[in-house]
Image (cartoon, rainbow, N blue to C red; front, side):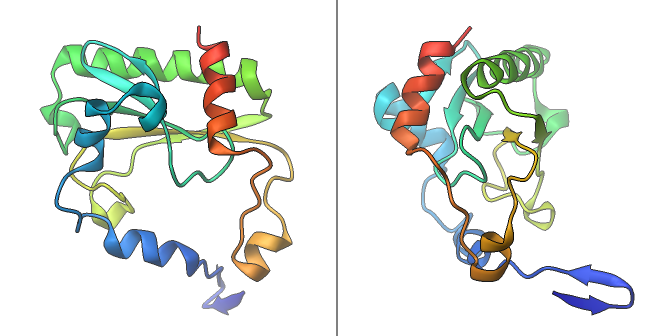
Amino acid sequence: MIILNNLKILWNPWRFEYVSRAGRERECILCELPKREDGEAYILYRGEWSYVVLNAYPYNSGHVMIATYRHVGMLENLTREELSEITELMVRTVATVKKAFNPDGFNIGLNIGRAAGAGVADHIHIHVVPRWVGDTNFIAIISGTKPLPIALNEVYVKLRECWS
């Protein structure tokens, strides 16, 4: 950790690889995922305007995203139907993750644009990240490694069983 003008800076260089290649793929991953089978893409639910999918690069076990089918980069360009459905799916996703993993809390948010940290900068998606007291420890800070106690396919099965 470095202290610069009373601002503590924690370096997380493992994130740079992901952020630096984001947006450089030929196809938008959030447009491509719905073309795959649910189990292959880890899609938990398909709505009329959007879908719920596991994050392939989770911050914590149970990290889920809600994405529109339509390739839209700004909230103000969503239709009322899209906005309503992603909001409803956010609530359902939180309930499902609570049932499956019993987290102590959640981080829920959107990163709109590359400057805001969006890995897929031009396709709206909401992150739902379950949090537990003490889920950040010295391993992530010192070694740049985030231990996840359950495999992605096991998370998928557990969340599908609990989907409400």
